[in-house]
Image 1: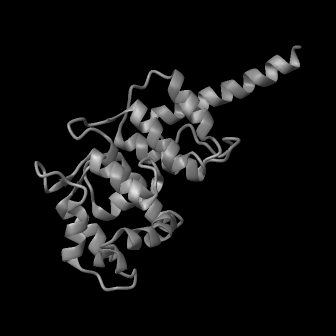
Image 2: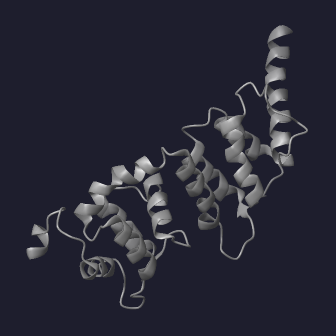
Image 3: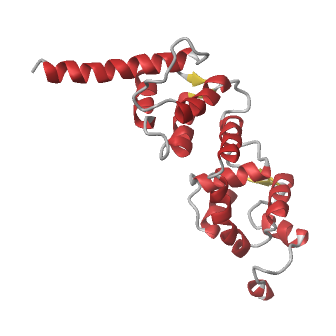
Length: 213
């Protein structure tokens, strides 16, 4: 009963933080918060599991596998955030979202997302996962994202490697919507050369078809 009266401004307690962690684990695996526990945790803090704030939280914890937090990761991240109750976590959500507004922090989280989201036994990220993560990270901010998603959809690519992943962010930040500052002889991965070629063709076809009608 006393637990309900813990105020958000009360000092951080590692013991309380651990007790909170164990509310989401099972006796079989007391040191790992798995998918079921994650669902309940997200429900308790009022956030959808696929909300970008969960990626920022995982980044803060240094979590290595999507859908899982180890006890060590939980303690690392939540000690740093000084969160040992649901109420404190809810208060921190806006702060976690605000981290994404800093370009350098965003870049770190974007790079972290690659290793976090891909299967640990695979060297590259499968295209379905990559599209979901790109939608989450760049969907709202990159005007060319819908076209890039369409390009991936019809392309031969089944996986995305780390170099391609990092360059997609760079491209989204530096290349104009009209592609006028894209240098085909630059050091971009072939995938992005192909995207530019594909997009120019798409736009060209639109002009041709409307002009010939």
